[in-house]
Image 1: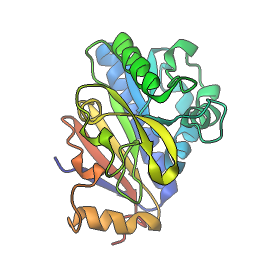
Image 2: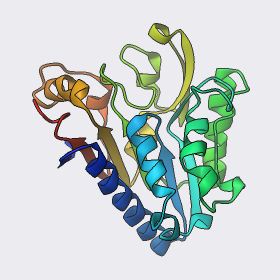
Image 3: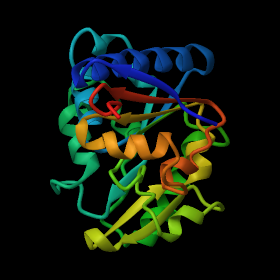
Length: 235
């Protein structure tokens, strides 16, 4: 399934559009099912989204008590580390919204990587049961990776668990990521792509100059969007 491409004039417009979409999806989910399950992403564009959601009027447009925050991937560092997606999201949004502490599900990265993956999969099952995520937010790396699904890593082929631990050699670091089955089952998936530095990979993917990149293996059964600014869509 190909993504519906939403091209905005600039990064600021992209973040505003994403905030409005986030609110819309959240309110629809809460109205229909009484709860909103979302997987957050790391990166500068998602950070801008979180910062906007933490400001008026967005903070009052969602019943945050019915929102459950998960993380699509995480670096295996302590939650106080500057590389932690949890720390970034906390400083950008979580600390500023009225969400119950029990509704924020960080990956327990103080544990060994494989154990982090096992525990987090169990947490997802306990909280969501057999329900899918309502929304998965993803960034796009210059190598075509999404979440921590990197080219050439075994995590790409994991299909029997919700999460997987992996060692990313080029960064000399361990990460834990949600797997394709979880992402593809979501009711909506949004990939954020901003900046001129992403124009080359967007062109390569869109024209199929290259194939088999992690982002190209996405096959969501729900709504699937690429939110891009003009700089990223320039080629």
